[in-house]
Image (cartoon, rainbow, N blue to C red; front, side, top):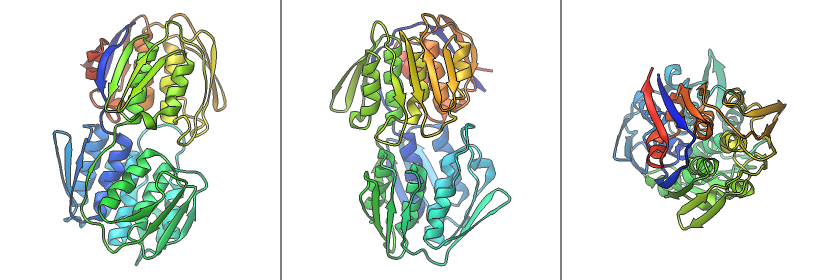
Length: 417
């Protein structure tokens, strides 16, 4: 396994470009199953999860390849309908194969998903939605087995606006007979992204970006060409790193309109945020001010930025609170930040971060994608050397993060253990 060696503290300065969105490209790749042809996807980040999704599509019988940020995926040869445990256990987004396989071929067998090891994240909403469309679903020895002679449009009301469930149900519904309405749908840009790709292929979808999606089934989805939006979480992470180190960083090829909640918190800490088109420049404050954060579903503050902001606030001049409303136990990064000297206490789903004057380098272990980036931010603020173990997590969600930070002045090195 690889590790990062980071020597701090440092002040990040310069310009950096954001890669394509991980949480968009994975379901768009899965949507190619619906076409039975060759799809072209641009601005694809070279991530471990992207490679895993390509391998999964190949195992199903597809033919995928990537060169220079462009992926070509031909699903004409799909004859296998099982997403095996060995692949699915490493990446939760594999569940996105379920809806398209069921819609196009009438059957699917997908292992229960794995991925980041924090908290219960059940797929019940995915399955209830598919059952409402007419699927027969059962769980057999850790596999989801779904069959349907045909899918029929239906009204589906989600108990929570789950991004994954919204996307999976939407992908199944585009080939269902009749009209499907998804109420309390997720509004995240990633949902809009998948809808846009499907509509390029002929899908009839209305309301993407709102809490009500209306999908009118069509007979087929044609192969599409699509360019992936910039990754708002990577952009937010780089912005938090700039603010944490008191630096000044221009972040290019991003979507500031997707990041208002993150910018509001950064400005509360004293950072200066300037937006211009598809760029944002973040200048850190001389003294970080405390802030109170409540995560929620888009357009509220994203849970995927909670850990990074916790690292930033660990050196604030006062106490901050972070209330985690999406995944109440998403705090595996707390013990590791404490190893760097952060003063954090937990009370259920609320973290109280009491700022300290000094963080010190120490060996720490990454536990998931966003925890990894929080530890990097902590290490950039800390005195001395920090070794971050198990950075394969960050390779799942951030493209060449050490090179990007290195170009901004960070003293960061990838080493083999």
